[in-house]
Length: 290
Image (cartoon, rainbow, N blue to C red; front, side, top):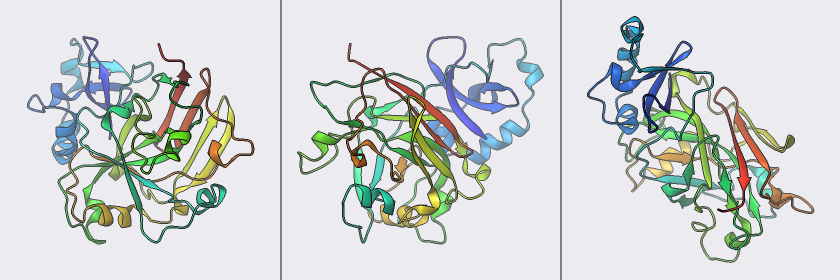
């Protein structure tokens, strides 16, 4: 399944599921469903509702919109945690002259950094002169999970999405922690939808990449992660309860602006496109703050 948030009768986005060439309002199929976070915690029920859906009965209502041209918002509505992993691709470590970690490096991004897959992102040069991009495979959690093991870790995954872990490099390296430099408003575009885990045969074998104004900057594959998804979920769930709607950003490959000579920092007017094989692409225009 593909899950998204799109506007139907009004301007506010609502949880939706793709059926054929239509986004269908989830509440039309499951009136008791509270929100997208609730759907992620009840995917078996959502799947059954989709299988039994009578779209003909919805034909005269405002519960469907065409997939083509639909206005997609952030596919999550109640994210608790954005858990991000640093230095998880060897070539990225090498291009930035960092040390290879012996365990995953965890940092956080505030949920207010989330923005839609095609929204504009403000680059405020009063705050940063070194804005950078990072394509990442995002893992979306589906059920409460703590103390996961290698045997059951992947069962906690609801699905996957494309993310851009935007970063202010000058702030990142001028402060002892990374959370502020990674958490400006809009510094985590996510989407374009959530593809449920059952539709991704092997998340550890997906091409991913970034282009800026059409110039390819990043091109790699998730096989090159130092710590795979299973290892990350086991590591994170030791002492931290993972909840439906939590997002794990699994690290970025080489090709970031920081690793270029000279660096090509993002500027207002740039268009950044990130993709992950089988999950779609997101595209965001960098703008000056209003």
